[in-house]
Image (tube, rainbow, N blue to C red; front, side, top):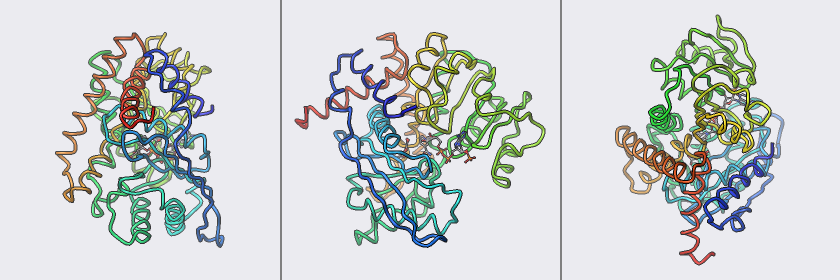
Length: 404
Ligand SMILES: NC(=O)C1=CN([C@@H]2O[C@H](COP(=O)(O)OP(=O)(O)OC[C@H]3O[C@@H](n4cnc5c(N)ncnc54)[C@H](OP(=O)(O)O)[C@@H]3O)[C@@H](O)[C@H]2O)C=CC1
Ligand SMILES: O=C(O)CCC(=O)C(=O)O
């Protein structure tokens, strides 16, 4: 699948359904910074390809994560940045959308090498980022340590402290105590609203067992029966439920969930088609397509991953009555807590756990209800409804700025 084409398909459809008329202005990003930068590794000086896309900044500075992955492409980062425009606008955050990526397999490098790669990437994009310009954060295969190196490198370049240039930092460096679990917690709040509308079996399958996947597993554990989990190496299925604490230990010690004993081994494809109440894609894009959509048995799909479902698949699922809680809503808890972290950095007084959770819950529930209202008004799925709300806001900001 081509993620940019997928993102543009929904953009165009939303534009037409609600007569918004912004597609022409948003079909390309405002700026794409493409770099090829050096970093010292065990192999000597290596060069890496990196991207930072600022898709649209009408609502505020660009905001969105940076991923380290061997499969990163310019089109993927552009799509991810467009999804950030929609997500940030939908949540009412004063941010435009951005995203970054470095083409690297972090599993082949040690910590000191990843530090050099993180610092090298920041040197290559430093003039384009800033607390009020473009604010990166973690995404796939990056974490708070990488964020700390990035912030430190940026501060060395600009020669002043700049906590607000990056979010998802360690707490001691201005990070927020909820950021680590924020993507999952936001999804959890959305799911709690969704199950009030649609009663489902309490069984859950989760694809991906990193920040988003582990977080949601911890939150749902006890309340739901988590019967299947996967990572890049494959998956496991236990009809009586998985002991999540034990699974986290196994993942930490052996590197994969497949080493958990006592469950049946399954593939990532099989996991998606299990007979469960709730399916949670929390790994990569394009896993639910027109090829498998018809075989999906879950009644609710909570998209913690960005872009897991193609538009064609969306339509099949909608016809079948599956409630898809779209990425731009379901995983918006991450950037919402990033916003709270950034405000705390700017005012010089961080928000504590309780304040953050209250603000997050309020914003997520509010966004869910907004989306529900628009989806009922036009009789459309929640993804399209989310885009309509967001695009109307972006359009208004562009109008007032005299950009359209
Ligand atoms: N972190 C955040 O704040 C946010 C993340 N997201 C999205 O959530 C998704 C997951 O991100 P996050 O949890 O942060 O990333 P992590 O790097 O923490 O975890 C990624 C997980 O996905 C698994 N994975 C990678 N490739 C595959 C594959 N081909 N099939 C199945 N599983 C795979 C990895 O497996 P393994 O462990 O074996 O490597 C890992 O368990 C992404 O789409 C991301 O954009 C969205 C909003 C915010
Ligand atoms: O926290 C952030 O700023 C961005 C998170 C992100 O990259 C995402 O929501 O996909």
